[in-house]
Image (tube, rainbow, N blue to C red; front, side, top):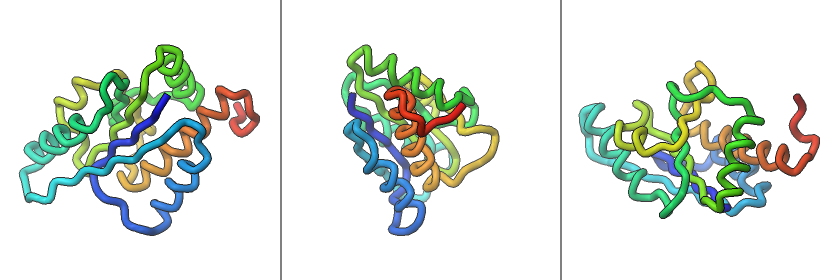
Length: 151
């Protein structure tokens, strides 16, 4: 199984990027980060729609899509591990989509196989990359029976 993180915006060097790279380097699944960006000044709805188009164009063929969305399921780490196991058993690749500051456009949410919320709090979308990479690493360790994760 190959994992792709699709993210709106370009991360600059710094602690948020370092956190992402720390956990990304620990994954055994091949991981790719694809960053997209719309430079034009657009109204919020038009920007969300354009960002959705940019993200949708980068989803690997046949991949399952999990959109990180505030209205998604507030799953546990074990739940995420279960989703990943199911997708891996199906032989599917997986893409996670992190939207911009205003969230995802309707087209991306309609395409998503799962919608995942990182709780009710609002997180900076650049920080979410590191949080997601850590959760992917945690899921990997749960599936391997490693004691990194404690219930």
